[in-house]
Structures are given as structure tokens and as C-alpha cells.
Image (cartoon, rainbow, N blue to C red; front, side, top):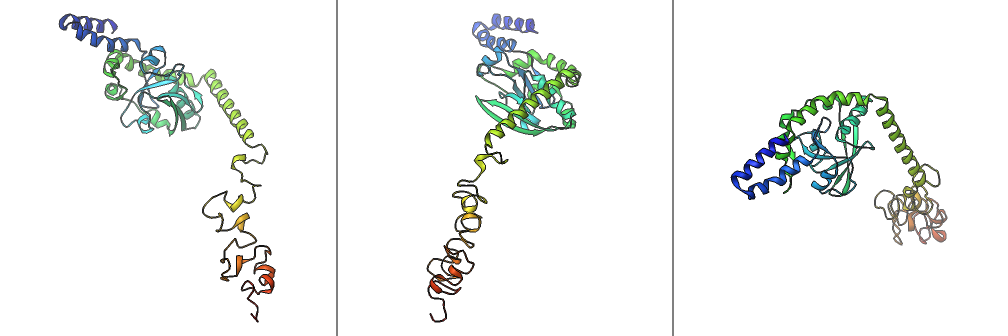
Length: 311
């Protein structure tokens, strides 16, 4: 295929002049310099392994690892999950992706072990993002019409032509899709792959447990930053956290889980004598009918300094 395109290029240069030939050469040269694509069964996407040529062509950060999404099938899983051409898949279920075919290997491995929910870490424009999606066995094994790959939503730039790239690798796309199914199944059932996935999963679990332990210095099973300020009593200050609004906040249930001394500050109105008198239960007495069970300074259960029978 390389010689075929080279012949076409020479013909164009000879017949139309150097200007057209010079304009066409970068596109063909770039397509030929890039690695072969891989069509992912799990994602309905064309993926590229990341090497120096891909890093340069797609303006990736030096040291980027994973699989680059070159194109997505309209209505396919990658598109539905919000992946875009140009995104780089770094990990799936916390396992680092080293090549495009590993995307399908990781997904199929977990599907065969009864797991269908998958978390993805992707790089987009130099920023890390996450996505979660369900991939079932039935969906994974749905056949993709690889002859339609040329019309998929694809990455494009002034220096890159997806049409030229597809023309360069159209035959290998079909061939790799046909033989990769058996290769993937053999890989995911091998002891080496199973051991690798198990080891990485165990490492991730240990890291998560260590992080949880560090966040819970007092060992009560609750992350320290989730506990209430000022002693952590029954929901924290104001029974819902500092400055919270709603059930449990100041003046709506009271301080210290239920209000100052059973009733809450100002639940009956300051100095107004309504519904139980000043502070509806007394600021300092804590008795359910007002200070000293009859109001401040001898008052009865109906008010402050003025609720007795003689006024």
C-alpha cells in the first residue's frame, strides 16, 4: 500500500506541478508514519497505540501513555459515554492501558468474571477526566461493520486527514478485527494476564485502604473531614454543621441536636410571651415549661415575669 500511494503522489507531482504535490505529501507522509489502527469491540471506536509519531501528530504531552481514540461510531458506546476523537484512555478499572487491544482484553476479562460496570480515566487537552459506563457481554460481542469505519466521527486537523489514513490502513483494519477476537480470548484466559489483573487490583485496594486510614486518624470509621466541628456531637454544631440551612440548623431545631435545652433558641419569640414564653423552655433552666418550671422569677408556665395568678 505504501508503494501504491507513493506512485499516486509521483503522478500528481508530474501532472499538476510541485505546488499540489507539496500540499499532498504531508498528509500522505503523516498517515504512513502513524501506527496501524485497532477497532475496539468494547467501545465501538478506532484506537491508536501511542508512540513518538502519535505524540507529535496529535500534540500530546510528552510521556503520555494509553490508547488514543481516533474515531467513534455514531451511536456507539464511546460516543454515548462522551468520549471524543483525540481523547487518550489511560486506565480502565484502575488498570493501565498499554495498547489498544488491552482495552478489549480488560473489558472482556471483567465481563467473564461477572463485572459489567467500568470506570475510565481519560486525558483530554491535557486534563484528566473520568467516565463510568456499563458494558454487557451481549453488547461486547455485537458485530461491528468495519466497512463503515471510514464514515465514523473522527479526529481532524490541518495536518491530518482521516480519509487518507483510512485509505492507507483499510485492509489491515478488516484483518485485525477478524483475528483479534480469538487473540483477546486467549489472552484473558491465560494465567499471566489473570495474575497481572489480580495483582493490580490488589495494589489499588491496598492504596485505597491506606488513604482511608490516613483520613481517619481517630479510627472511628468516619473520615475526619466528614466529622462535625467542635466535638462532633449528634450532627455537629447546629445539628447539621456550621452554617447549614434546613433541618438541624440554628433556629430550626436548635443548637446541640434539638436546640438549647429542649425547644431551641427563640422558638417562642424573645420578650413576646408567645407559645411558652421567653425562649420556650428557658435559656438556663432546661425545664420543658420555662425557667424553673414556671417562668423566670416565679412566673407560671405561660410567660416571663408575669404569668402568675396575681399578675
